[in-house]
Picture 1 (cartoon, rainbow over the protein chains, first blue to last red):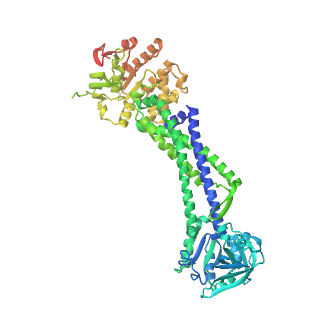
Picture 2: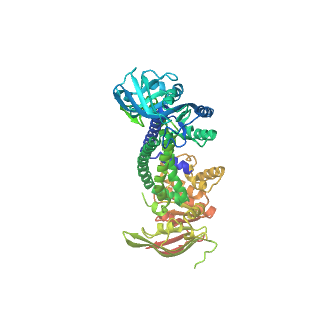
Picture 3: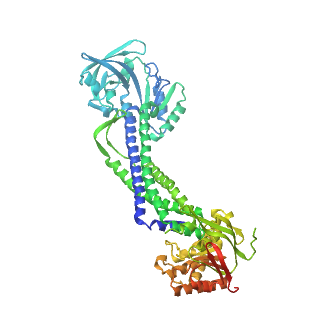
Length: 404
Length: 236
């Protein structure tokens, strides 16, 4: 009967109920789009950042990540790679060699970062081939080809076919230098990196840096990014080698990850604003409704309704409006997120996040974009409804029945 | 301390009620000692402001006295918590109000059924008793109507049915005929009188209505919050 009275009470003042519901629906939909948009945008950023550059998980010699050094290497990387490849969920892996040096084209010179890559594996893992915007990718082993970043090409006024001399230090202490032919210009999406980076075939880089088959980094990608922690653990267990360190992307790109987490904290402010919209709407209308029905609550108490039942009656009305609004808001939220996930929103100018360029942002339809707004709306409505409910439950029947 | 006898359904001792009107204390009731026995058909009379409604509210636990004690069916009202008091009213007292006070969102049948729902009476029994009670008050065929679709007299019949259906020991009626025409008022009074005689339920009215005074077998007059006269016409 409490439910029946609550349900019928809702339709007594239709306009007021609609206004209350609208506050909740708008709050829910805004919150849902906010979360769907945020998850979609960050999902894209993470996907681009990891897929294009750092992968999902990396393996290094212990201590390399904190303090990179030419000498902290992985010796039998093929064996490590074979073990990694057997772990379910791993898509691809690729070895890398890093070195710092001086690059010269003609009379121009600048400091460069040398990255040695296994062309086939790098292409499979981070779509290396798609980043080459001019010329071609590196040839197979010992080709003496070099691909340089777009910014670096500009700095050195280098063109395809130019010869580039690299000076560095070999792992044996010798002075390393060699001449390479520029076969491609690359754009990774990270301008800062493209201004200093050049890419060599893995064997060429190992020869230049006198690494004798050793590498510095293994980058791997997984099929589902949500499984990164689980796969990281599995690799650690399977390798069982204290000289190797397995790091998920969040550890590899600490500052990027922290910046993104800090940005996400901003979502909480949005949720507080939405809670306030809902709270003000609910408090105003429910309190008004309780005041209007003071006499009725007095009668209900007089004929034997317990204060706790009156309390439940008021909260029940709030809950019914909330649940109805959540259902409508969920439909609108899913629809808006679905449309935004297909068409996205193209910004007037592209922006860079974590070194990755973006212009069109897409939303995502996920459970989070429904569950969090539902909890937010229901929680704020019920909390705000407590005050009128307590007020109604504590009414003195004799006094209440004197009101008109 | 006064001891309630087995047959005493309402006992008050030194009941006093002081209201603060604009900060000025107003004595609504002063030291009322009264005993009403089971089955009595009692009218509380007196001019407006004499304390009739206040007294009804206090003996039903709808309001608390400033001083004094009330025993209802042997229990002290002031010793009960809010929930206990609600349960006690639900199981022992039926109310008939001057303004009917039906629940507007419930139909006639649901209004009458409401108290039995609180008492968790099984559905079949509820339906049976509601049907019988609506017939007794002459409202068969009105079960699905809303209170707003009824006349004042019909609404008061629903209120009587609601008060009677749970078979309480006491029915308190605050000016039950005040808003009714004299014919309807007489009909309802006759109905309550016969219910009193048939079931032995105790009726206490507050009233200005000469018809009610004529029907009542005990007449108590309140003046300035005190009992002025207490007259039993004949024993029931």
